[in-house]
Structure formats: structure tokens, C-alpha cells
Length: 441
Image (tube, rainbow, N blue to C red):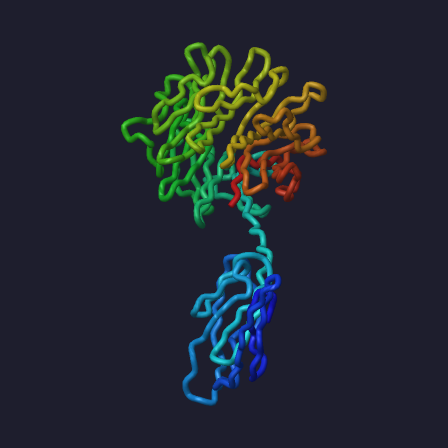
């Protein structure tokens, strides 16, 4: 008998089990009888599982002196680690070792279940950008875990760039441009040519929700939101009417609403940061229009709308975040040197990350930055002559930033930083290349 009062029959005979509590004791007479089972074996005597794994145990051998035997009785000596049901199905719960017992009449056999530490899933990291050739003509590319894939283009004369990447299921969507054409690629081929080439056009951002693919960009002067290759509003040719230059730079879908961040020139020739929802203007004046203002990225979570961008103060661009249409109280930069908030990501617990860059007045260099809104310091990734953060994505406890920096030969190279450390070699460094967008799954 063990310390918990579990009795294991070892031999035929009679034994007295005594239990004491203080001066009080009680006894139990246990009689071990000869039974019909002479041999009992399981299909496994030892198995290894990870938490939440399931295995099925069964009787592989049962020999008895008589034709009929009793039912199998299953048990676990530690159900916090692994449990077993009355059919022999074992479910692992937590790391440790549990003994699963199968008893038929007089005979018991066991299986040792070892529950191992779960293996961390290694996410796939996707990037979108371009690599130039020796003639400095840009070719759109994506990288998956550091391995480059060229995207098709109409010719080798015009610049082709991939600005945004989104992974949904097994499909990889990329928004960009081929010369003057706004393009959506899917799984490495052109899925949609969104414009006719009559104007210089770009597709800057892509977001996929179920079977619907949303793309934000512009065609000439007009800021546009496309849904499945058509204008989001079939009765309108864009988010703006084309009177003034306008750009739709970021699209995000949340709770059946589609949000677009961008900017449009006013009558005084200044860009005004704006936000649209479902094709209609929601925040017309994130900036007051006295100086240029730019809304570059939008993220919506827990009922709040966050926009990252920058606004000129008359001296320099000031990187900032707007929440629900109002600038947050602390700007990301102090306004003495140019600061640019390019991309925003908000975690479930509302930690706000912004990637971008800021001019260092002492060295006169642009420095790639990651701001955590509310912190007094921004993280810098590199001491390169010039470096730019362009996109941020948070996966579990890891923060990824894509961008580009100038190498020792004066050539811009694409970069991916994970938790502030450079990862992957994305190009050979001989021709200009950028990593505009990062997506992790």
C-alpha cells in the first residue's frame, strides 16, 4: 500500500491494512485471491506526449484460465499530468510522468506516460520589397524566412516594387506597383491589375478577411480602396474625388469595418492626415492643415482606432500616434529633427509599437527606430550611416521590424530586425534593395 492508501495486490493471500490517526486506528482485511488472468499486456509500455496530445492504449495480449474475464479498469496515478478514460484514451495535460494502469480481474499492467515540454513553434517570417539590378531598375520580391522569390513583372524596364504583404491560410498576397500599374500578386503571380496605366498608380497596403481582399492605394491624384479588384464603393471612383492629390497608405479590417489611413492636400497645398471607414471619411482632420500631416498606418483593436504618422511643426516632422481621432499626449519625437512614424502594431493588451526613423542632429544620420508608446526611449537598431524602420509586426513576445540601411559601400540593403537584432542576409549588398513590409505567422 502506498502513502495515499492505494493497495496493489502482489501475491495470493491475506493481509491486514492498518490506518492510524493519532491514537485511533482502524483495520481492513484484504484477501488476494487467485484469478483467471495469467497474462496481460498493453500495446505500449511507455509513450511520450506533449501537453494536449492524445494516445490510445489497448490490451494487446490477454490470457486466462477461463473463457470469460472481467472488464478492463483504467486508472492514472497522477491525473494532473495525464488522464485515461474507460476506453484507454490517454490525454496529456502537464509536464511530468504518470503511470497508467490497466486491470483485468486479478492482473494489472502499466504504461509509463512521459509528458514533455512543448516544442516552441517556429513562425514563418515574410517580407516584401525590391532588389535592384546593376542598372538600378527595381524588381519586386518577397522573402520567406530569408529566402528570396522574384515576383513577375511586365518587362525589365520599369521599376516594380512590393509594398505590403499579408498571409491568409496558405495564400500569400502582395500589393505594389509595376511601372504605373497598381498590382496585387497572389502566391507569386499577378492576380489583379487594379489600374489601367493612364496615371502613375500604386497599391500600398493589402488586408485579407475571409474571401475578401482589400487594397489601399492611389491612381493619379485619387486615393482608392479596392475590394476584390473593384472599387470598394461601386458608385464612386475612390475615397477622394481627384481634385487634390491624395494617398491611401494603409488598410485594416476589424469587426466588419474597413479602415484606411492616408492624406490629402487642402486648398493651401498642405497635406492633411485623414482616416476613412467603410469608404466614408471618419476623421477628416487628424492634422489642422497649417503644415503637412501624414497618416501612414492604421490598427484597430478592442474598440479603439490607432493611427501612426507624422506632422510638420514648421521646423521638422514630428512622429506621433492618434487614438480615436485625437493625438496622444506624448509625441514620439521632440520636433527638433525630422521624425517619421511609418507603421503601427497594437497588441491584445494594448501595447503600442511604432516603427519608423528619426534624424540624429549630431551625426546628421537617419536612424531606424522602434517606439513603444508611453516609454521615454525609442530603440535604435543600428549604427549604419542611414537606416529606416518601415514595418512592425508582433508575434508572441517577439517584435519584428523590417526596413533598410546603408552598408559600408554606400549601398542600401534590406533588413529584418527581431527584438532589435539583425536576422537573415537578404541581399548581397551590391545593389539597392529595401524590405518594406513584414508579416509573421
